[in-house]
Image (cartoon, rainbow, N blue to C red; front, side):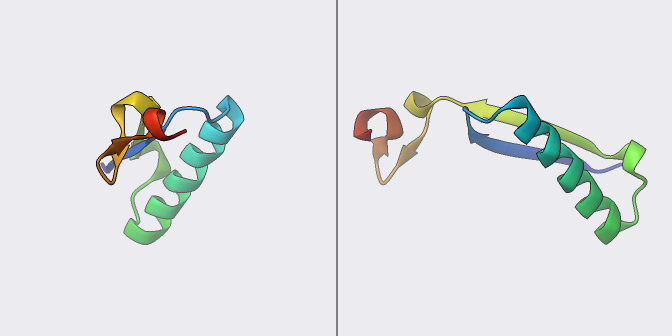
Length: 62
């Protein structure tokens, strides 16, 4: 029963997140043999003010 967590910046559409879940589930099923109905995908979205790269928050750079 695989659990997959995807962490990414917010801003993707519902269709993009739906496609991501479908493709990640298919890839995990193909590589591990786990049945798709047993694979759980969590999407954790972060705001740019809660994410830093090179010591600078993305909300401060853009």
